[in-house]
Amino acid sequence: MYIGTSKLTHTYWPGTPFAADALKNISFSVGQGTFTLLIGPSGSGKTTLIQHLNGLLKPSAGEVYFDGKKIGPDKAALLALRRRVGLVFQMPEDQFFSETVFDEIAYAPRNLGLDEKKVEERVNRAVAQVGLERSRLLDRHPFQLSAGQKRRVAIASVLSLEPEVLILDEPAAGLDPEGKGNLLNLLSSLNRAGKITIMVSTHHLDEIAALADNLVVLNEGGLVMSGKTKEILARGAELKELGLALPQVTGIMHELAARGLPVSTDIYSLSAACDEILQAKRADQR
Amino acid sequence: MAALKTEIIIETRALCYSYAGAEEVPPAVAGIDLKVSRGEYLALLGVNGSGKTTLLKLLNALLIPSQGEVLVKGISTVEAERVQLVRQACGMIFQNPDNQIVATTVEEDIAFGLENMALPAAEIRRRVDQVAGRLGLTHLLRQPPHLLSGGEKQRTAIAGILAMQPACILMDEPTAMLDPAGRRDVLETVKELNKTEALAVVHVTHNPAEAAEANRIVVLEQGRIVADGKPGEILTDLKLLHGLKLQGTVAAELAHLLRQRGLNLPTAILQNRELVESLCISEPVS
Image 1: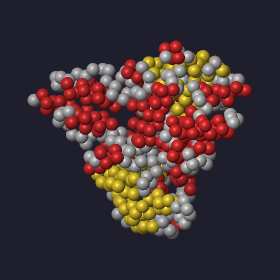
Image 2: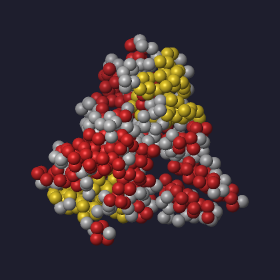
Image 3: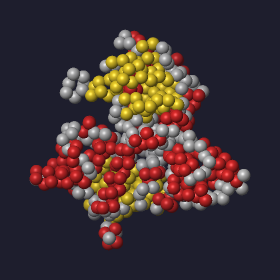
Image 4: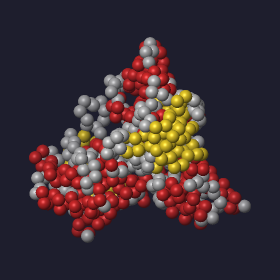
């Protein structure tokens, strides 16, 4: 098991009248180098689960695993875990606290006790990874950047730890179409070229589903589906029941198929939809 | 009805706003003349940093114009002693529901604005019960807000504004943090109020599908209005939108890709069903 949980249960406010099980008996795992989406309605436990994978919460019952080992209560092991599993919170730019972009991204490597030259190397590499123009931005105050740039700085400030796993909570919220597109390209290249294992928690599957190998679906703290993207998204009616929505293009493909156009329905991006429709139209012609 | 429609709720004249200490940066709002009438549902589009949120804050006196003016029901927002009237006439819903709930139960939260208006207790009770019934929150009145779903929290925020009997509601990406069911919940609530009570709506969004629900779209670029028209005109004008780094609806974008690849499709496709309809009757590829 590369990263995952076994019978994980998390209870908030245990032993009080407010005790609530946020996670119930969750078992799942994903392999190294994969891209996984974690979906589920609001309050289904996605954020709680993510926090467990990075050791921010202690299980009420069950275990969390990383790289074949159980994540234990041992503090040194937890610290090591947080270096290898990077977590990007919702609206991460709300947590900026440094005077310059450089210092923001350098914060984590400096805390690792690296010398300043190594720190600079790490910052430069992270900045290049997220595709920011280095010379122009590093000396600026983080709050002077655009929303898309801020989000990329926030991701760079986690990448500077050089994590093996990157977990992001609703990373595209509030970004305009270009910012969203850039973010998806970034996640795809980190995963494919950088060999980083990626997990994204999101409500919106448009385009991002085309990048994902696996889908994990939570509802009311329980794991209700887990498997290959194609298998899970073929269960559209069940997802709808949970208040979730298929990617919009997938909906269009279903309608076309229902009207007799010979198209596949496991299509999650505009470009794939375009290819598929053209092929179907050409086949129709013959 | 025609007479009602011409009643101007909000008017801006040569409106400009620059953030303090940002001399080299161009103004966030750079000369906007805009009128919003009773019963109008206006969607505000633009990339991150185009001035949408700044404009919204200027409309309910959270920001005061650097130059020009904003009139809400004829009251200028610079009249400090009448700011309360401006905010009662024009309430704001923010992106993150957790940032705007102030009280410990739903009913106290809805009553918050009314208490600030120093209304008699019986009148407050009457209005809270009325809007709760209107928005389907009656069964939740005694609940603490943290137990609500995202959509219920946003509806609570809307109820708090509605109780003040406003003429206009301002929304800054109100669905960005919500799941698909919550998103539908909030949008349907607002559309219904717009229709039945002629409540004016100004809705900032990055989601073309949401903008398509409005009856007017205003597009901002660098603090100026660059387009103003019906959703059917603006959201199918992909040359305009792409030039501004924006996107049309998924159906419009897919139709555009297919046209580029030689498929003969009408240019006015906005909704999924229009695309499906066209594809099922259109000529095969040449």
